Length: 251
Image 1 (tube, rainbow, N blue to C red):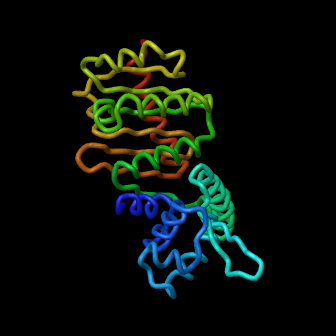
Image 2: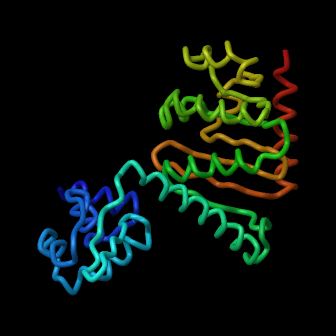
Image 3: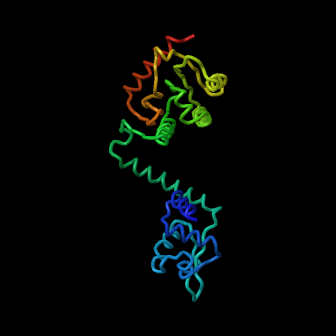
């Protein structure tokens, strides 16, 4: 039972009293304040605030019976995705407001992201911010393969393809792995071209991608982290370095 409460709290941001009351309501058609207090072992006077919060958040419906005290019922779980959708809309509205009042807006030049989840978030932002139709990247596929796995990496490629962005990838590798060979065999489908370079000449322990003024750098070995930089001068510089290496290994 505690596990169910914990999931409700983590997924929906409920507190322990809210999760107990909502779960108790799911087990019965309707319930009064007194019956909820009895079922949840929560003092009657302490039931009012979390119950009101659940009504406000959309988890509980109120039944007003003429001449009697109100009773309450839990919204069936199949309707809970609607709560997520409302939260998404509210979040987008909030981001619009914050974007208008944040000092400098998009001029914030450096963002640091820690941990595996942070790396994925930074990668998603980089994809979202990409406006040009070409990425120039230095990839360390060995690290990426161990970190996210083939499925995660290929799903990200498909998101890039959906935006019709072509990728020019410089890959330090002495020998292509079966996975890399599979990726290369789908170059046309995945909108990419690859240059394999010597890791002795160009050792890369990080992945770097540039698209216009946006630069994405990630390190995913023992302590994963990522950095997003928005700077036109740095973007042009990394593109120039990429072009020099690319031209040297052109077929």
